[in-house]
Length: 182
Image 1: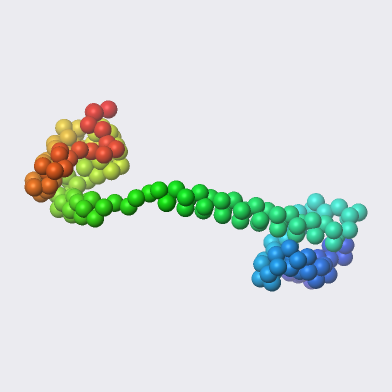
Image 2: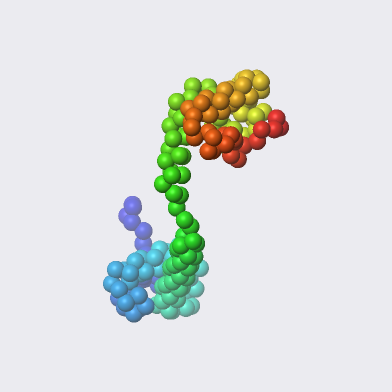
């Protein structure tokens, strides 16, 4: 019949479901996790069906696949938990920015938004993306001198906008960028 595949009577996985569910429940101690484990084992079994040795008992082969799926899941959960604990321990030592710093950063971001588009684009490519002046001028398709002029004007505009902040902040400089021409 078209669309139906005849199953090999020696590969009667459906007949082993009760055994697989029972063992999965013993391993996981949770019905939902057991069902997920059985499903995972069945997917693996069908994927490895060509490797099944008909001389071996199907039940034992399926139980071994289920057990290996369980061990793999346990290792994965353990590794995830360990990574989460490590990340949490690192986060404990991290100190958030002060309110003053956050307000200052917000002010700088607002000032950057007020820059003309050509200056904003040039400053972003060099200061944020870390492109060299030569690469940024190629991206914007402008001569190198034009790019440098735009960045210079952007810096000067930001200094003027910051006004009283500039004395405290010092000169604005590129972070992660390079003033070199390479």
